Length: 202
Image 1 (cartoon, rainbow, N blue to C red):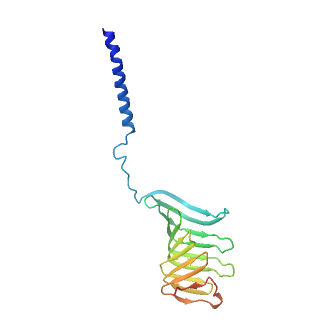
Image 2 (cartoon, one colour; image 1 turned 30 degrees about the horizontal axis):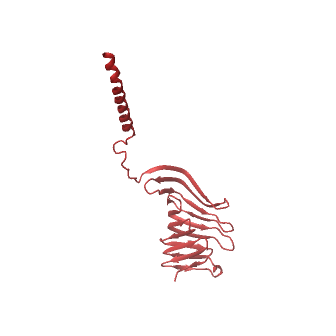
Image 3 (tube, rainbow, N blue to C red; image 1 turned 90 degrees about the vertical axis):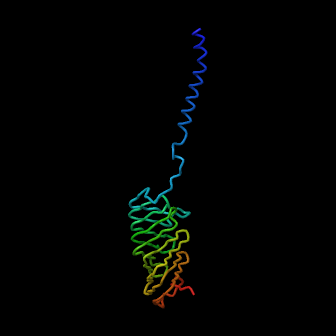
């Protein structure tokens, strides 16, 4: 009689054990409380870099742009990075090197927009019959994909013996055309009236 009872209980015990294991597996795979809630990203640093350097290559494998900085702090919410002592250099075959620097700056997530602040400066080396060009302002925005540098701040432009000041500037490194905006003052040396001379939109 006892043997019959134990034999009859075996399927019940097996089913109970199976149910228990199933419940445990279900609990183990369920997300914990608040785990499914998406945490909003905060404007907090998520990584750092010292002596930062990144280069963009052209189709031939040559360096087209290089961005360097003594330090970089990246923020998770907007993918922006703060830069200290940034320098942006553009290299184009057969054209003078253009260097843009600042005391501080920012770069967006895909490095397509670089902002340079505080003692910002652009220097285009002399070459191809053109003298060195230098522009100084408190802010320059480098649009990497368009190969354009612009500012909405007062700017001082020196090109050889020519000196100009303006309320803003747009420099296209492809066409080498400089546009000055707002209150433009200064003088352009007669011997420097080439295609890359500053122009004021009419």
